[in-house]
Length: 213
Length: 213
Image (cartoon, helix red, strand yellow):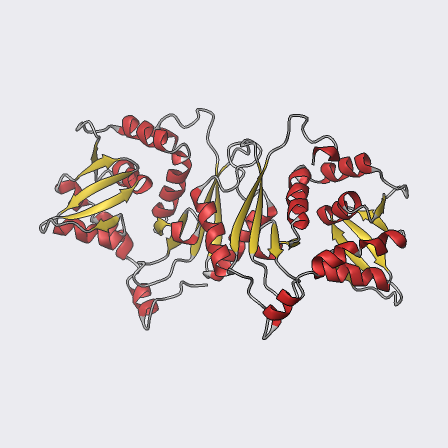
């Protein structure tokens, strides 16, 4: 089953434009060239983008634009998984901590892990889908962890509602009770998405560094 | 906010008929007089009802009628909480095990607890709502544990979607993740029910007998 388009002709447009996600990932070079720096702020990363970067972020659907009074800069708010993916997997973003120092892999990893214990699992799920050219956005509106779009969200509705379960049973009891499972399924049905459950298993080292990805 | 009626005039009818739930509970005498016996079968109890009992079960909304070829008897399938409530709290039902012996309180309790570890919490929630004259039915259609009706389900829609959480944190991680909470809330909104979360705490003895209720 293909994706449901938004409005007349958008499905055909999306199909014709299939390569835009990959293109825009290649365009991450622009972030590198402009030496982009994100600012760590609680559970998100703020990025002040020039026109070229704004174009990249919008086309590849990273971050959420924030309205400010600054005219020459468009600020974006990146979630932890998005920011780490741009930083670690695409290597097109540097991240500055609240102490004004540039973070290295391990520092950023342990910071984000301290903010959210399940960060490694969410990041793994996010990276996996992104690497397969899905556009991944927060699923909070639909009561799941992520939603996945086959094309740009402006053109199509998301196809998958994604739940991320950590493999070891003690830490995660989600979907263990029948009524919870029915709740998720019924909701997915009502918003016309397919439920995708990703079970992520930690290796024995306990995900102490990003190399565990 | 009052309950939403089903069809024209049903709300007024339900209000006028407010006492029918209590009436029918008093009518449990008919079950006692007829010396009703339920047959334990897996996770449910089967009850072959005469006309008078059928009337009671239908008016008080216990059990689910089963279609059989028997003409003089209407069979009902009772859930574990329903059966135990009729057996222990209303004392209007005897229950026969698969070994053809009548079960006493402790035997039935440990049987049902062995079938479902959270049985004591579900039963406590069920009994509590029933004792407050709510009609309680399975919530599986709505992805919750129970739904609660202010009047007879034939007249009104259920008002509450009930989730039963066991108090101790380790055993029950439901609603701990934001997206699960959002999922439940969004679903409750879409079916026009209010979410009612019941936290049930076990006492120190660990619910070894029905006296812990």
